[in-house]
Image: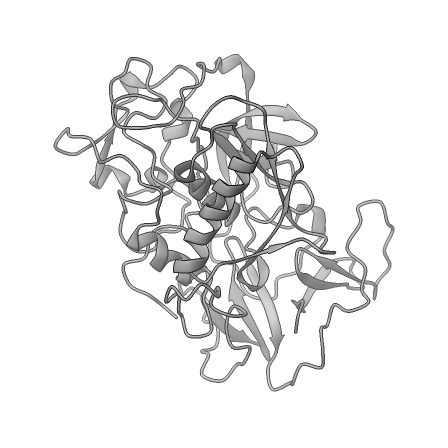
Length: 391
């Protein structure tokens, strides 16, 4: 399942992403007004201090990426890049920074506000992902975690999206003229991916021209030292900023080391995007052969041939290990239990279990579903992951 030359899609921290981009020389995105620094608040995300705009209702904007109060903190909580499998979670509502979609499948709702063109752009963008990677898309029936795709009413080629699985509040907000280039990028955020220029090794490949960046947007170009790097820097990635993103003077904000600008982004995934996605969301054969079926159910659920977890070893998102008789898969910020080794699944372990509710008082032994997984409350009042729904 481990693929070489993967894009850094699992670079967890650092955010600061925006695709409301300047429509200068080689980009077709819309420019947005300069952001006053007085409108920004400081929050910690995965151990790093960032500046975000408070939109109310527990939602914060970091460029085109939407973060929730579940993902942010007012204090510099310690962030562990190499957690051990089986670590309990004290409160599900504060369980994760970035979470993958279970079974490689994005559950979505098309809001009635969308125009016929926005719906077509959305379906075309989904097809780009599903035809080339292990990602699948499913319109919501009764799932309790999903992303709603809505028309934000702005007359622009712009959009914004939550980072990873958020639950019923997950959204992709489309502008009236949002193109496939932008929508493919936003789906990347929904999958949990962060901008390429935020990698800690970016200075070996590009120069950030801070003198040309809009006031208040400087943090969009910050470099993360907490990010998990996989594969080589990919200038062609759909998650890479354009050369003129957030320019205040029609001069480039990003150049190559020789001072030239990189080519304008196309409405397609790069080879690195494809390889990286099939690492982060592995299929049954490690696949993504372009067959359009999404690569199956996210991998054969067996412990046979899977190595035991080793303390201190670096693991990437999508890697699988065995630990104390269970199969685990690495998520962006933790390990997810998939199933118990040597036990044949008997139907869906989540059948008949109600989803987690903030307003419900739970007792030890109670079980809930949460973002595609089954949890049981232990006697120490910590939630324990019991496995992935569907097994």
